[in-house]
Amino acid sequence: MNVGPYKFSEFKELAVKFHGYAAPGLLIGGYMTVAAKAALPDGVLFEALVETYNCLPDAVQLLTPCSTGNKRLHVVHYGKTALSLFDKYSGRGVRARVDPGLLGPRPEIRAWIMKEKGKEEQDEALLEQQIAEAGTTIIALQPVTVDLSRLNRKSDGPLAFCPRCGESFPAAHGGLCRGCAEGAPYSVPS
Ligand SMILES: [Zn+2]
Image (cartoon, rainbow, N blue to C red; front, side, top):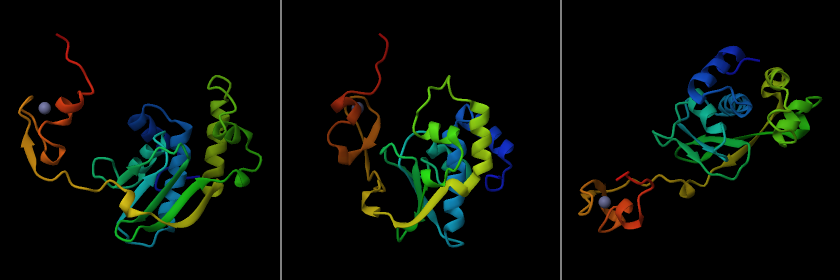
């Protein structure tokens, strides 16, 4: 089954270019994304909320204008294979998830979802084949209203120069930038 405007093989190539390899979660995430998008009314300015950092955010970034960089892609790590696309202003939208009840006789997908097999044990070609055959038929959709107050949409506000490192940072963070105040997330070789 095609993944939106792409043949399955084309989407796999896109996945390799963008993600490094055609991860099963990205392929299934592609179908989740197109299923949710098709269920939104035409012309809605939408954002995305993805419930895991694994793979799915990249499916959304490949198939919609929502990205982390434009802040239309929100990720919360609940470790769930689920995503919602929703109206930016009202929060109303559609949540997509893989429904185990819709899997039918597709043991490789089931084993992958439940992580029943190690990567070496998993028959990757068969898994891909089952994903491509199943397409959007294993995706369950439900209407949802996303709680917009829980999304990180605040602007950084005015900037200031940090008196210690000299770099600009949001003045609301205090007298020093967070790197200087709390320790930077890197060290510099001496
Ligand atoms: Zn600083």
